Image 1 (cartoon, rainbow, N blue to C red):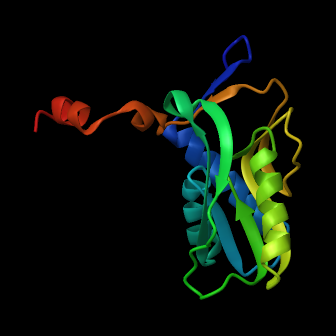
Image 2: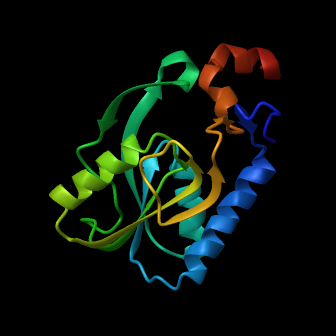
Length: 174
């Protein structure tokens, strides 16, 4: 649900999963044949996992991090993992890069630059996200929602960013 001021988008679990399903349909209907899904952890892990299951493709993971301050709401320095975790040795062939959103575009631009420079076995690379913001300098190949007002997206699992084990103990009285 987008707030009236256009500055916040609140997404329920049902909406989130529906958007990933719509992304799967877009990818499928493109008839693009690819070998592996490479998701960017953390934001791309949930969409990558679901797409991997629906599209029946192996899932590789590359860890990136830039939103760490203020319970994950403030973008900082981008860290990109040196290695990709994949069940098939080295990532190669046609790869679908998956993240949750193209926000500023910085992460996706930098990851693609790194993949093209350091991973010669990748022969083709396309990208998929749930949301693309109007301010993004990156245009994904597949996207479900374009957000011209650049709202802050409140994803359903973000409550865990500021939750501690002690709070869970209190919640569940364990």
